[in-house]
Image (cartoon, rainbow, N blue to C red; front, side):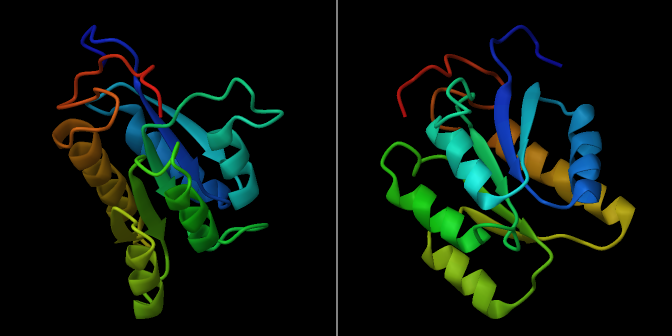
Length: 160
């Protein structure tokens, strides 16, 4: 539901597991806040999309990134480090959404300035609950850079 407040919130899901992609899409389908989900199947593709490098020259600016850690081509921690060191991308909130419960992963991602760390539950209902909780918090409560706040979308064309 868009409520007529402009463009939807742009979410980039960086996930290589097709099952988790499907579940995330389903969980966000009936979201309270209008959103557009783009999927990157690996870390290199995610960075190309975010930077708008070919063939992603017309990629949308992401307002929120859901980042898995165990990715092909470039590990999620490396992607996070690249994002947070890039002045154009460092303010995009990054939610780590991964199966890892390892304390080392948790500490390293927070050291790299992840905005939060969420462990994917195994069960379907719990997974749906977690994704909806992320949506409730990050898209309905938090004020995102670029004027997207409190579930209402404003001008997302602000420079990043």
